[in-house]
Each structure stands twice: as C-alpha cells, then as structure tokens.
View 1 (cartoon, one colour):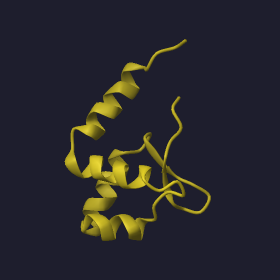
View 2 (cartoon, one colour):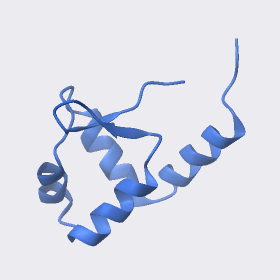
View 3 (tube, one colour):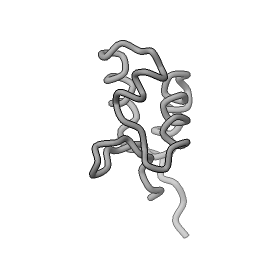
Length: 76
C-alpha cells in the first residue's frame, strides 16, 4: 500500500494552514453535489479576486465536476 507523497502532504498542509481555505473545504465537503462559485462567494463573503486566489491554491484538493460545481478530489 502506497503512502501519501511528499507533494500531496505539502499541498494538504498549505491548504489547512489558511483559515479561508479550510472554510472552502468545509463548505464543499458538506454538499454531496458540490458547491457553485456563487454559493462559495455568498457563504464566505470574499471579493472575487480573493476567492479566485484561494480556489487556485486548493488545486489538487478540489476540482470542478461536470455541472461546474466545486467538489473534493478523490484521494490518490
């Protein structure tokens, strides 16, 4: 059984080390269908630029599904 790579571990630590990113992950994880950009913006109250930045920082942990909703990526 393979363990978590150093790169994945670093990505997780970076994400969890920031309050807004933790909040984004919580919001997305609570909705099985994922969360839309508008839903995230409404819940977080972040300006567009800041939300875009935080979503970019979470690449690898979240992705957009076919409905263009943010969902957690499956463990690899």
